[in-house]
Amino acid sequence: MSDNQDPDGEAVVITPRRGRREASIPLRVVMTFVRQDYQDLCGLAGTPGKTREFADCPYREGVWCGRPLTIVGPAPGAPYAVLVMEKLIALGARAILGLGWCGSLQADLKVGDLVVPDAAHSEEGTSPHYPVSEPNPGPDPILSGLLSQQLHRRGYGFHTGKVWTTDAFYRETVHKVKSYGEQGILAVDMEMSALFTVGQFRRVAVAGLLIVSDELAGLTWRHGFRQARLHQARQQAAQVALDTLAAWEGGHD
Image (cartoon, rainbow, N blue to C red; front, side, top):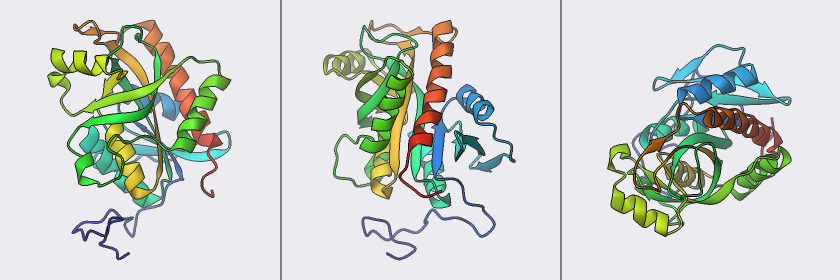
């Protein structure tokens, strides 16, 4: 494969690559989409080094359970998340865990609940540019399996199922919320389908862990941004994300 050819054999004009003066990063990455999660993870993992940036998105290196890793974010929305993700892969990332928030589409899924997506229905515009065989892309089974194991190990309950990914926060219409909820889709987010698609395209392990921040199943918006249960769930999810990446053995440090 040439430097300007993608995995599908298509010639491209711009290829993600590491610049001459850019240092590589550890294999393991936690990607966040909310600033508070990025800050909390940096605090947990130490991140003693200098903050670096790509496309105005900060990232720092840290250590968890003796494993070097990178904390990235926030990179909200599919286009921005993939722009940053492509660069991270070029810098050496081989396992990326997306830690984000979601709106529940099921009445029994409440603020503070944890969701492990096993597939994603895409209504974002980034995934179609990355041809993969799966119409509803899912996570890497090994990394996602480790995530479930770590949640069980810590005794945290969670839900597994499909999510709906959209670019349009303000176009989560009553019809769509009702229809997708009736199809059994658990929640709506803004990144997962794109991350899963690019992970498959670039042959990089990707998984996701979502925290329910608001509820839509009643066809009115009930947010929980100030609820103590959301804050507690965020702390739990941050530790589980780091545990999962530390347990991943897919590469050589």
